[in-house]
Image (cartoon, rainbow, N blue to C red; front, side, top):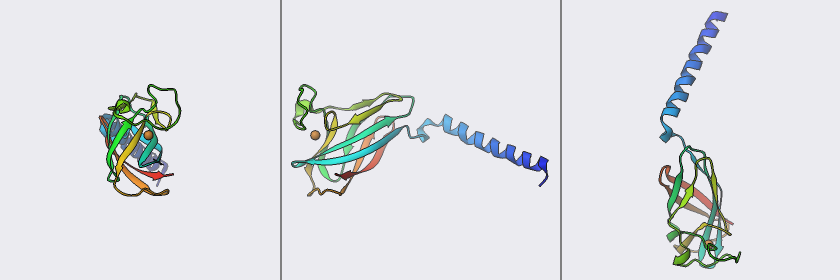
Length: 152
Ligand SMILES: [Cu+2]
């Protein structure tokens, strides 16, 4: 291949790359703006707490509004220390249940022992350390996100 030919094929390759980039930009639904990091589960009596970092790299706010798992009857969002200064884990009554977690664009939210997190109640079976629990997280914009969480 002569010099002219190789420049021409390089230009064609660039044109293809540009089309791919443009179509990705025009279809934001194909991007995955929500990422789940450092997901972990911890047993607490006859319940299991789920902790993770939710990262929103998209340009729009999103909202985690529901969680489902075959491992438990219910998976609820809680803010157990919303109205107390105590830093112990506990207090999962209906007063501390929250409807959803908002994640602003370009921001992240930490679901932690000390703050908001997910609790699994009515476990389907015994939960052992090292076991993996499959979760489906439901987001308003990002839709369903599957995540496997390992029990510490
Ligand atoms: Cu909890």
